[in-house]
Image 1 (cartoon, helix red, strand yellow):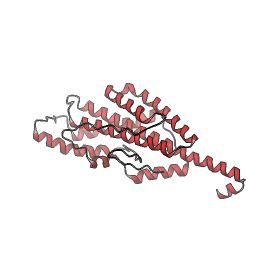
Image 2 (image 1 turned 180 degrees about the vertical axis):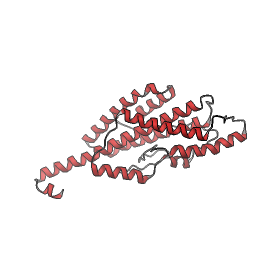
Image 3 (image 1 turned 135 degrees about the vertical axis):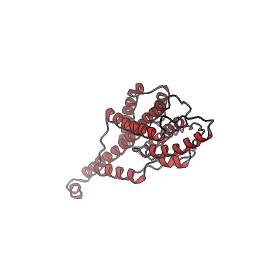
Image 4 (image 1 turned 90 degrees about the horizontal axis):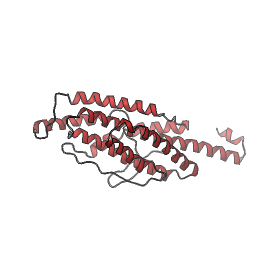
Length: 256
């Protein structure tokens, strides 16, 4: 590559360097935008599976937990997109960010009919808080839980291993390319995620088990099983990315 640059004049060398740098920057932007979208859609489909599984138990703590996982993902998404605006200030990069956000908005709107009103509102939150031309920090409050403690350990389980993220990013930097998934690919992965959630639910919460908040023994059993559900559930796929947005109580690191 050094000889390739040396065979051209200084102006051409600079132009080639800038083109290669932007290709890398563009690929990283696309990676964060679409991986984040995939994570969000995965959790929506998983939330839908949990709500359907406990359709006769609307107050089951697993439902609240699934909602909180989506809300936490919305906060992470907001931090990621805020970072994208701060880290990529060039005209080409800003145009790329806006263009990809617009495409994602259209993708998200096509998912509306897949979900009920509650999940549609979460999609609207994603669009409003993370997919506008300029993004500011907007962190949503988690719902109160009765039997599950949504603590730092659960937050840590939501974030995939840093090594995996670093490997993906290094590959993109070297290739200077990211293949953007189409809507059907995103949906197929989300359905796989949903099916794995259903499998976990059937193993951890057999249909013969009914949740009764007044029964201390059942509640304790649900808490124990819930811990397993959380651990197994978060080990499926790559539920979240990391980002360097800072909120009142969260700090994430985005790799460049």
